[in-house]
Amino acid sequence: MKFLVVDDFSTMRRIIKNLLHDLGYANVTEADDGQTALPMLQGGNFDFLITDWNMPGMPGLDLLKAVRADAKLKQMPVLMLTAESKREQIVEAAQAGVNGYVIKPFTAVTLKEKIDKILESRAGAK
Amino acid sequence: MPAKTDLKERYGQAVAALTASMHADDEVAFATALGGFPDTAESTLRTDLRELTENLRFALDRFSTDSRLADLAEKEVPDARHRLEHVLKLTDEAAHATLDLVERSGPLAERTGVRAAGILPLWQRFRDRNIEQKDFQILLAAMDAFLPSARADSEQVRNNLAEVLMAQGYQDISGQIIRGVMQLVTEIEIVLVSLMRLSSVESVRAAPAAATSSRGHGPVVPGVDHGKVVSGQQDVDALLSGLGM
Image (cartoon, rainbow over all chains, first blue to last red; front, top):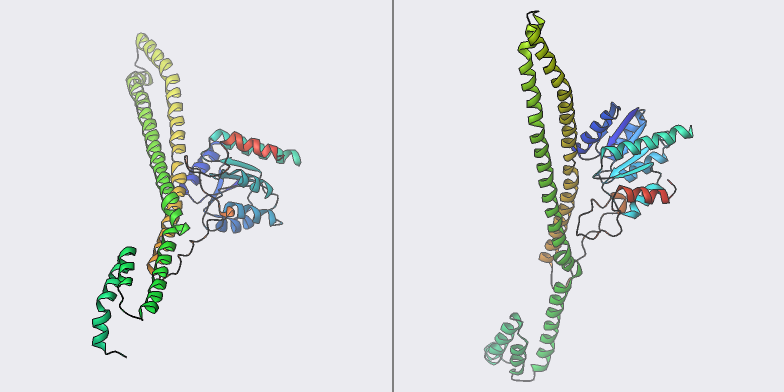
């Protein structure tokens, strides 16, 4: 399973990458904002997108909308991992088609739970 | 028309008093100076000066009541201080958490090393087939004690390292808060430059609009009003499940 982790802070990308490794997902690529991530997604056969919201360039919500608007990418599981915690924002992300929403600071257990849940529901839908 | 010297003689003193009181923004002195004008030109001069005073007052009023400037000074600058205090707290906590974990891990690694070193001579004699029955029994007992403790210690060190990794997350949160304060500083700079350029009664323009919701609002800072925010992951899950997710 190939993951793309999008966050403007390299420390956070490292944390997520390490946690994914611990969960058995060794194939993890990084991007520092939506603008960099979108062409990577379009050309990279990724299976799972984990993205922050608040980033310079293209923010995570716009990346999510771009993914959902792209015929090739629209089915991709997207987990938002962000410090954005306004209720209206979470509703907005849900309406834009996010599959999971984890707020920072987060725990390894929460990340695992959400990824498992998304993958389970994907497997069930197939 | 009177000669210039006449004008200076007749009005010089009164005009000087008027100018001085206007610069000092002293209404009483200004009115007294106005009353001191000697002849018929008085009423026209009075009207002009009154208009000038009103304009001056208007400019001062606009200056002092400009809402953006007031907002910046009264709310956002103290908020920024609060945000930076939170950054200090986050970095302090993360540094201490990391140091605690390193201090807890060091002795565990050391204990494993010391115990292994203690076993090595007997182990070497065993490998050389040069060990007595009694020493072999001691070696077995030492190995029995060492292996589970080494396993437990290394597992604890591994867990501590994972926690050290997680403690570095402070950099993301604090970086976002600092970036927000930097935006505020830029905004203050823009307002101050506008004030410096303020000519006569021009008002200070409002600062650029706040970030749109698509760009995000940044992390919640305790003590700063963020509107309706979730209190934690459980709250997020409840909200999303309410939306059918």
